[in-house]
Amino acid sequence: MKVLIVEDEAPAFRRLEKILHEIDADIEIMEVFDSIEDTVKWMKNHQSPDLAFMDIQISDGISFQIFDKAEVKCPVIFTTAFDEYMLKAFKVNSIDYLLKPIKKEELEGALKKYKHLHQTPPMLSQFSLQEILSQIRLGGDPYKSRFLVKQGEKMLAIKAKDIICFQSKHGIVHIITDSQKSYLSDFTLDDLLNQLDPMIFFRANRQFIVNIDFINTVHRYFKGKLMVEMDHFEGDQIIVSSEKATAFKQWMDQ
Image 1 (tube, helix red, strand yellow):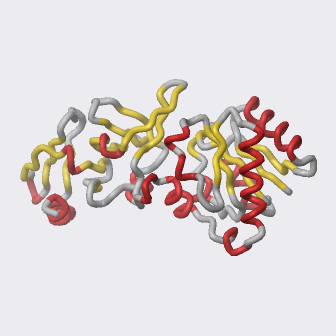
Image 2: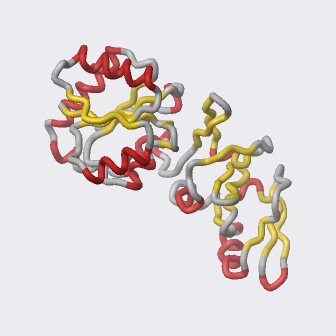
Image 3: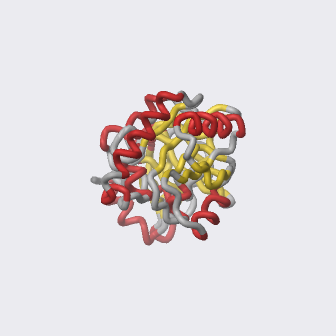
């Protein structure tokens, strides 16, 4: 079995490598990468491995971005330091996850699942970013219910319902919460539009996506534009363009 590993923590890689070889000495680790950029470059120019192990949070972003930039033809087992309750939906079909520090018995179980799925080729041809994302959304909801963000050395789960808005500044997207805290996001506003419930979130302009539950007042602005006031938000003015004003009002009146 040929394996690709995406992991930016050397101790975590060494532990995974050690246990893999204890389970099956014939496992060949093709490459190890610690970034999205290097992984994507390699995948575009090399034959697909049989199986990939990917840490979720790596040096230059979140490993789900790999699927958006390269064709991933192999099944993936995610590794993560996050609490199990946040990832329980991973344990379905062809994708599994391992909670760090990795335990040998759990890795054996994940490899058994892979070998079982490997006997049914049609399953292995259906990997795509959308399927992976749908499998990690809790309760079967087709939209993201929470976002993982960094806070120093920690990772936090921010519930979508607690997000006032997403704001793009100088190409960096900030998540603004009802506690008036701001966190950096690895997604662009365009990415987020495909992940957020359109009944709850609206792209007001090039800088903002707003949450309907935090809209306080909408004012008429000049030249057919609208100005939106949000609860618990004291940042830049949020202006809806005249082109989007009608759609915005229809969205508000849903």
